[in-house]
Image 1 (cartoon, one colour):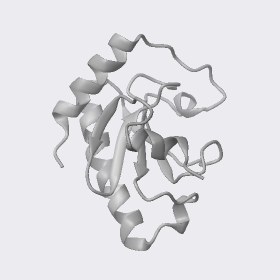
Image 2 (image 1 turned 135 degrees about the vertical axis):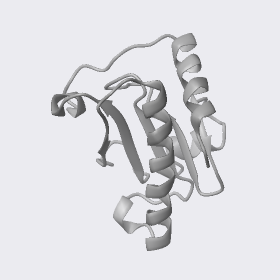
Image 3 (image 1 turned 60 degrees about the vertical axis):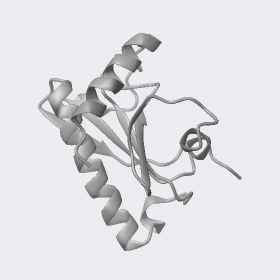
Length: 132
């Protein structure tokens, strides 16, 4: 079964793309915990992150690091928090979340709402900072 992330990668569902290469895709989470909350996904549809082959897992982390550095340049924060849950969508992914405290990465917090224009502006700014 095709996941929602595979549909996003194929362009069947719109997204606020941050970066893409031949193996990975990064886009803004539409239900963010903080401004700049980004998802990094493998283009290979594998459910569980730790089922990825070692080279793919390592590459995903390097890709995520580049995306995180770009987010830091655009969104004021102390750190980029990293979370791997993988329960809602059966497709390996990493959450990159700008944080100023540990409480900022709690998924029980209410999600933020942004307009389409705000998402587009933020995605554009972060994308410009990517060095792949």
